[in-house]
Image 1 (cartoon, one colour):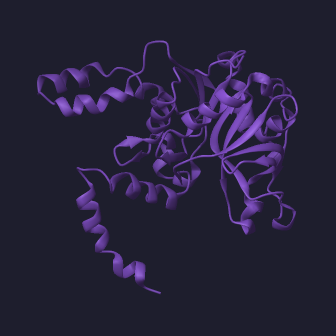
Image 2 (spheres, one colour):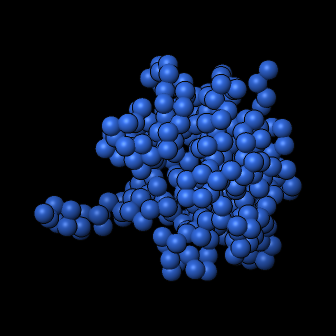
Length: 294
């Protein structure tokens, strides 16, 4: 019997150095794409997938992420007094049911695998999702698509995308077995192979559904690439123990941990909004000369 998936872990302890000085005094996950912070997009995506419990793996200086999901009594009272109904409605998604969100501290930056291990008490013996807020996927809930696949296959399911063959040395690449065009069997994981050695051009993005079987390998705290505890290494060790699949998800991914990706997301998430689309299209026309310039 496949156990229902109701938990999500969100690793948010990173320093956000690529966005300094903006992230000197605020978590990068609080950077807004249009009018919602990155962390809100991740929580909304998980909720759409039916996930009900959330664990933020935080670091020093990240308390504002927890405060964001608290009730802002003074603000809400003021908005009610002033009849700001639309503003109150905009606040609603930032509220969570009491007891449904917890936070644990990752005291040292020892990698993604270590961050997930820090959430071991929250995970327990249950399957869980991982969402990296740096990645935003526009379209139907990406983690929801993984949950649908998990409900069919069980085991581990990760979101995958095709990367240019010449760029395989930048990513963790799947060694694949059977492939129906959407769901692929994972036979192995190869970290940053040279193009001529890459077993495929399928790379994992920041969305995972994992069984608790991975935790026994993370608990060994073995160091891998970068002298960090690598989640990829622990996942690879579960191959053969539990089913392992990659899903070619539907939607467009924006890497908001990269400045260019972050700026592209601003346009993508505003251009089709009724309240902003016209203005965005109008001001983009002013920059056409720069786009067309050699």
